[in-house]
Amino acid sequence: MSRVVFEGATRVFPGQERPAVDHVDLEVADGEFLVLVGPSGCGKSTTLRMLAGLEDVDDGRILIGDRDVTRMPPKERDIAMVFQNYALYPHMTVGENMGFALRIAKVPKADITTRVAEAAELLGLTEYLDRKPKALSGGQRQRVAMGRAIVRSPRVFCMDEPLSNLDAKLRVQTRTQVAALQRRLGTTTVYVTHDQVEAMTMGDRVAVLKDGVLQQVAAPRELYDHPVNLFVAGFMGSPAMNLFELPVIDGGVEFGTRILPVPREALTGAGGSTVVVGVRPENLAVSHEGLPIVVDVVEELGSDAYLYGRADGVTPPVVARTDWRNPPVKGTTTHLEVIDPDAVHHFDPVTGHRLGR
Amino acid sequence: MSLRTRAAGASPLMYVTLTFVVLLSAAPLYFMLVMASRANSDILGIPPPLLPGDQLVSNVDRVFANADVQFAEALLNTLIVASVATLAVVVTSALAGFAFAKLKFRGRNVLLVVVVATMMVPVQLGLIPLYMLMTKLGLAGGLASVTLPFLVSGFGVFFMRQYAAQAIPDELIEAARVDGASTLRIFWSIVFPALRPAAAVLGLLTFMERWNDFLWPYIALDFDHPTVQVALSRLSGGYYTDQALVMAGTLMGTLPLVLVFILFGRQIVGGIMEGGLKS
Ligand SMILES: Nc1ncnc2c1ncn2[C@@H]1O[C@H](COP(=O)(O)OP(=O)(O)OP(=O)(O)O)[C@@H](O)[C@H]1O
Ligand SMILES: [Mg+2]
Image 1 (cartoon, rainbow over the protein chains, first blue to last red):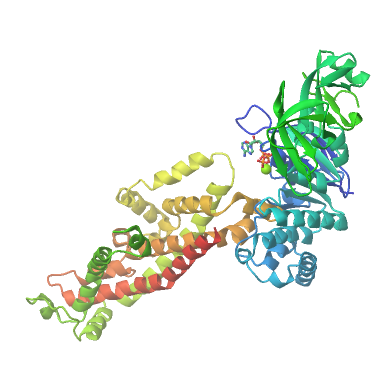
Image 2 (image 1 turned 135 degrees about the vertical axis):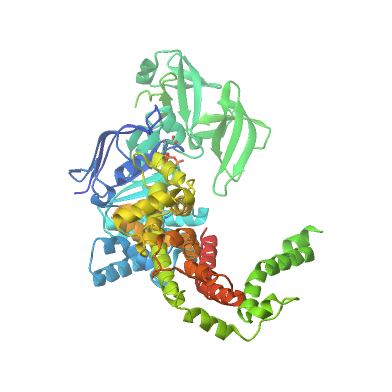
């Protein structure tokens, strides 16, 4: 049993008023891959480092398994960490790097050799075991950092943006490898990233953090389909969800020439005269009716094309997925219509909370 | 001068200047050799000799043969004193430098200021109290009296702290902590290897300083325990100074330093190169 529990975990850095991590309650099940995601400076690394024992916990508790580890030094927590810049020991070979923790734990030499060899095999590092880190490519170093964590068979993996130093292509490749490796080993993993695509594709569940406060913890699909507030709605998804603040008119909102129905529970929740309507780009289609927009840019990504346009009375540019074979022409006016009214999100314009289900 | 020539290499003027500087700094060493290899009468002649003579071996023999000077014993004494002090300074400075640079503890900044402040006290100021202290401890006269006060160096601590602060990323230490290493283990396995280039520089500087120290050993040591510099001073005492003899002794007293420099200088350069490639 190696679940991880944060109970009101709080970290206030000395000399700062606002906590960097603010009463985080979070439970990671045994064997689960949990991704911590959020914008830069939101406290992801700090949360992870609190779990690893590298940062003090000013309030609350952290449990690993059933043990309260809040005040324990890292070495008593039986966790392994993969750092963003890998932090490989520069004067040790790949094999020594991977075996270092075992050597400290006084594991017999022969055992160390076998376990390192196994991990190296798993990661395709066998031929590099005698090299120093400086003679490796970025991707190979990344794998050594993973190997160093795997060899120990710890209770929990802590990973802090381990892929962010790889080039785009390798990152995508490694993403699936890391996720597959975690499934295979079944080790509880907390993974920090600021990349919401990584979060969506890798995690069993995703925890979204903003200004040190946990916003939502849910499976990627749930997070995408039912964001609990404006922040999560805008953060998850690329391109981001369109958010329109629209006046309420008898049972719906005015969306250009159409009236979008708004469920009653959302309307009663709103209270005011406007409601924020969230529509994902893929839920908008070019049409001869609906919201009139002027097309500014058409971004063609090969399989998809996105059009960016301006609409009257809507401040941020509107994004919609369009047919890449037949995209609208720049500078022309066209209309956008909502494809599936049930997949439209509603939020309270004041609190930002989700309205209705 | 075009940009390209500047990028490609030094200008002729630069070469001439550098050659001149090299000659200037090598000249004393060269004339030491010249004088050490000639008879005293030759040296004082006008014009003075410019080339080495053939009396080096006999001059050196005379240095070692002089019972008042005890030159062989002095060499050995200095080697012991300088080696012990160097080893101690390197180890303590690396330990303390690591602590000041990478560990958080209460009073860290105040202590560092105290350490730096010790560098500002002139040695001469401490001579008399130090002598009294050594007498009280019953160490005055022996080698311990010139070793003990120099086992720790404020400069060394500060130097290693500065190097450790920039050469060792915090993540490296955190990684070792997560791997289960104790602080001492982190020092030996992770930090010290990274500090090696700085340790070599500090070791060399300390060894030279101890080897060349004169004033305190001259005061503290008794007749039977001279260091090299003290022994050299005995060569030139008396009514009549045999310059050839003094220079032969100086040459013998300098050679070990040159040797150490050649041995460790390579390591230092190697260390610097390694550091450059790593980043
Ligand atoms: N040692 C520290 N001392 C003081 N403040 C700190 C310290 N470390 C982090 N902070 C502050 O705490 C907040 C959270 O930092 P943290 O490193 O956890 O962010 P992050 O979510 O990991 O961001 P990024 O994606 O940029 O890595 C930031 O506002 C940061 O300035
Ligand atoms: Mg971070």
